Amino acid sequence: MKYGKIENNIVVQVQPYFEEGFIEIADSVEAQMEQKTDGTFDFSQSHYDKIQAQKDELTEANANKASGNQKLLDLGLTQAEATALTGYTPPVAE
Image 1 (cartoon, rainbow, N blue to C red):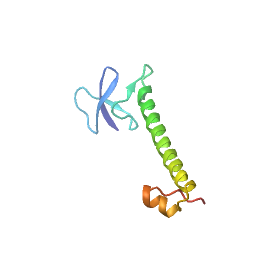
Image 2 (image 1 turned 90 degrees about the horizontal axis):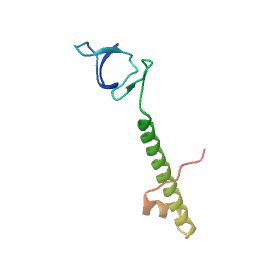
Image 3 (image 1 turned 180 degrees about the horizontal axis):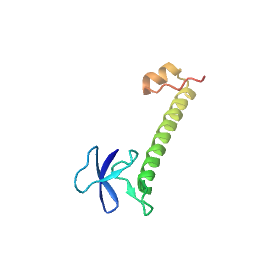
Image 4 (image 1 turned 60 degrees about the vertical axis):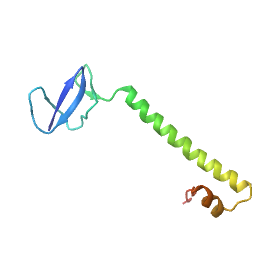
């Protein structure tokens, strides 16, 4: 059981004890969640969009590392030499 302070349908603060201006909320509710018209809570779409953008950036960075590594190998370097230059170690296939 925890309590949240809600302003403009946004949870601005969460705490474990009751205080004036706070309401009882489910344990799954976190700060920055929006209270929907049906009383449930969820993060805004922009929150999920930011998470997806971060995932996309990470995927692109990993692809660029693998691509750069392969280009060095295509130039004739050994994997040990390519790793020494870039710090990239390809994942081990299982």
